[in-house]
Length: 163
Image (cartoon, rainbow, N blue to C red; front, top):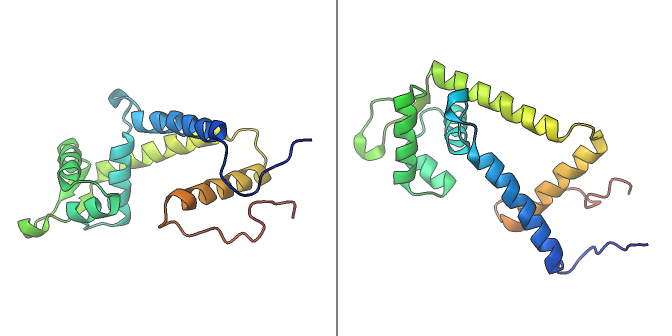
């Protein structure tokens, strides 16, 4: 019978396996769909999603939250404005222009969100709700271990749903 290790450092083989799976998943997510299918790349999706949740934010705000250089955000913003997905309202240039989604931006974001949810649903096909709950819990637990700003799980059973 195989025993589960509950604490301590994981073995290198397990770390490598988890890392390889994450790399594959990140490659899939960041590759985005091709431009001819009317979907957004992950960077565009992240940008438009943030602006949709924070209308009137500025590139400097996005730069701070995403932890990337303002020039990177400005390049993405410029592209999204050129595509007609964003509008940059008037405001003092030194503060940056308040950003908001256009109707076209809301539409392309909705199409992309629907497609992404479909991809996740396909990956979860055949899973029971208990498996999904466990998976979500473990993802949150992992994330809180690598991202100190993530609140720790409040699950007293540490993901053991049989307890």
